[in-house]
Length: 126
Length: 85
Image (cartoon, rainbow over all chains, first blue to last red; front, side, top):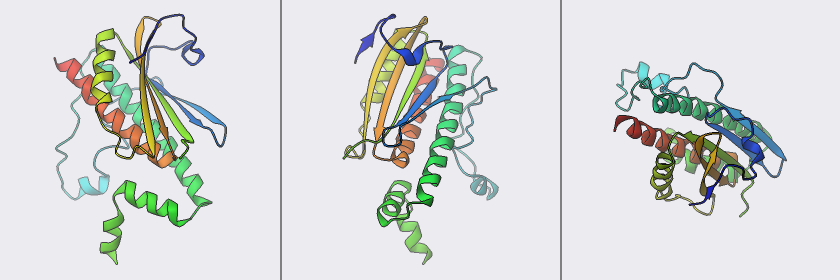
């Protein structure tokens, strides 16, 4: 574990408002993108996590549904983390989509199947 | 294999103890595909907050997305535990 003290050089953190945030870098494309949670409102139920609408409409009960955030600093942090998670998912999904549109090779397809766990599902469909 | 994509998560905690416990809890999780991704942790004290910085490195945006999603989900559970107890 490394601990820095106040005053150490860390330009990315100047002017922060004590909210979680993320910074995305892509070395190959020289991209730097700061992802902020914004002013809210923030909720513990994420838009990009949990079961899909299709599953919920099929009558499946979401047993892992997150509890409501308490009216506390940590409750607020948990809601903000959910918003940050959503924004990261949306941003990276958009990047994946834009990259895959010009890159349809077998390696990318194999990686997608392994990471999404859809390799067996695809086989079942045919 | 080079890590072309990276993401730094910056999480503010009120107490040093909270940031430290979160770091220790997250750092024991193994990386399922260490050749494809790497994670490092750091704590700093800035603007009256103890920041947990989590640096994620991956070979692609897809791997980075999976990794970030898993870590943030774990982090939310840790924060919920702090809030409950």
